[in-house]
Amino acid sequence: MHALSGHSGSSKTVVGAVSRAAHLVRLLDAADLPAVDGASGFPLPPKLSVTSCHGGQGFSVAPDRCDLHIDVRTTPTFDAQDAETLLRKAVAELDAELPAPAPTEVTPVAAWPPFRLREDEQPAAALLNAAAEAGLTVRAKTAGPSNIGNLLAGEGIAATAGFGVPYEGLHGIDERARLTELPTVYAVYQRAVLDLLRAG
Image (cartoon, rainbow, N blue to C red; front, side):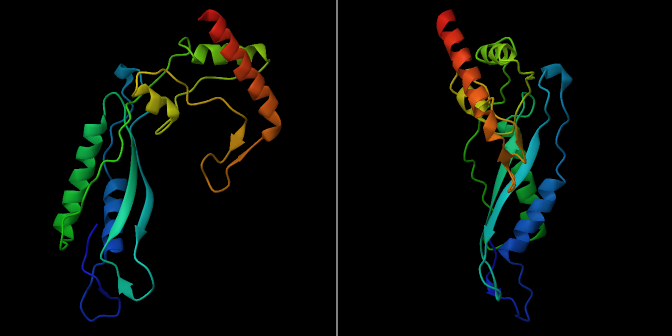
């Protein structure tokens, strides 16, 4: 986002880039995203998250630039083009309500397809079987919005988002994992890999 730079104490009203970014965040938070589409069989709805905001420095200058990072979970019925359209619509509304010296820029960085691996597909089946043989009760679930399964699915490779130790606070500042479970997780992966090699 762009804006005119100016002194925060100026008698002229200066809407800095950070203030414009905050307005865009409000527009995105209020965006109307579709609900879960039962017909597609995909269990999660689209989701939009503002994940970072960078702009300005010091106390007395209204900044002329601010950058936002936005992550959107796509689904079979709400793809990357739909996500970009939603973002560009919010940006156009921002630029109309709070004009700036330059239009707000939207730069797509990466787009991964929505992806769901069935429990009976490999390598999910091998991991679930190996966990059961190790005496663990686990359940499959669909992860998102961004995980290794989506990245590899874009290359035509079936993959899981992972099986690991029990955890709390995933990706939060207080994220933590029970490392005492690592030997069991290692054994499950070893059994699953060996089963897949034998089957291959």
